[in-house]
Length: 174
Image (tube, rainbow, N blue to C red; front, side, top):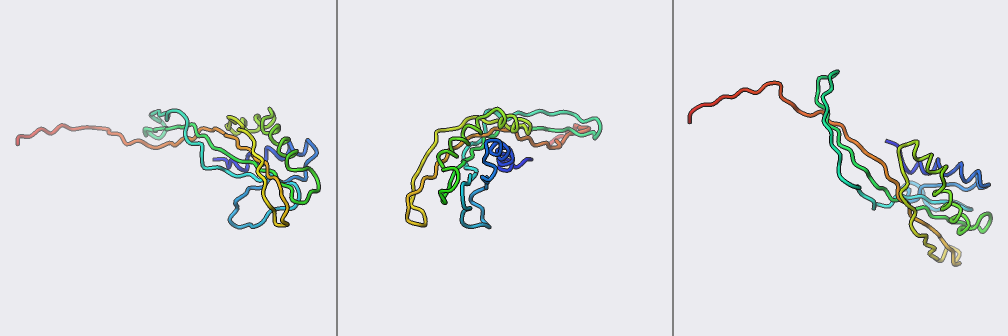
């Protein structure tokens, strides 16, 4: 199974470089081992526990002649929601709102969709942007624009099913 956070990151970095922003890192936020934030313009990516399954679970059962077993496959389309937030606390380089707007366009681009499609992942939609303001560690107001987007992919489990080779009827009186 592919790590979708890493897929998003590795698909977005070359597109940012093409637009002249190769110095902008895309990092996973909410890391338990790292504290603080990076200096300069940065994109923070995190998975939001929303999404869920979509549609009905598919089931199929097939006899495998090679292994002489009955294989049961169950598949489900899964929706996962991610949030991408832009930040620049130094004031040097691209500002957060411009970086946010550029990233929104890149996520919706055909090149990004194609990179996801090669890994059997689809992008469903990008929802409305938010631009909350907060007071930073230097007591100044700062903006942190972000947006959510939903990816879809199919997950499948394969199990060996129990089966009988023979059944005997044993009827007795009570």
